[in-house]
Image (spheres, one colour):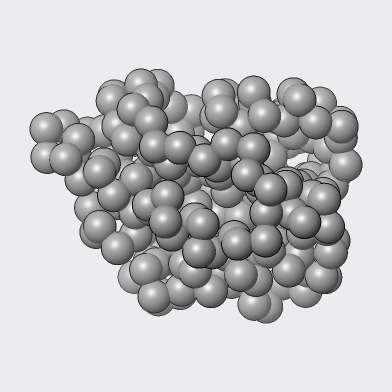
Length: 207
C-alpha cells in the first residue's frame, strides 16, 4: 500500500469520534447471528466496531488494517467492551496468517485498491477452512450514481474499487452461494456512511 493511502486512513481514524460509528454493520450482525462461533478474520477493519461485536458474542477474533491509528482505536474500544481481539497492522502478505486458519472471513466495506483487490480475495480464500464462510458487503459499481447525488454518502469514487456480482463470482468460484445480490441500502454508520447507496451482498460457503 502507498504512503498516501496509509496517511489517508490514519487521518480519518485519528479523530476522537468513530468514522463509521461504534455499532456493528447490520448485515454482518444478521449473518453472524446465524452461525456457530469459531475463528473469524476482519480485513481492513479500521476502528474495530465489527471485530469487537464478534468478540462480544464469542468469536475468536482477528483483524488487520494498514492504519496504526485504526488499530489504536480498535484496541481501546475492545478494552472498553472487555473483550480481546488480535489486531495487526500491515498488508495481508506480511502478517503470517496460515492456510485454512479461519472459520469465517468478514469483508465489510473492505475496498482494496483496484490493482490488488482480486489478488487479496484469492489470498483470503486460502486462509479460509473448507466449509467456512465469506460474509461480504461493499459498495457496487452502481454506487457511483448515488455518490453523484449525495457525495456525503461515502464510499470510493473510483469505479474500479467498487464491485459487481460478476467480480465476486470470479474471485470466489469455489463456493456454495447462499446469497449474492445487488441491493439498495440505507446506511447510518457514523459520519462517512450515511444515506442511500448501492451494495453487493454475498454469503458463500467454501466447498
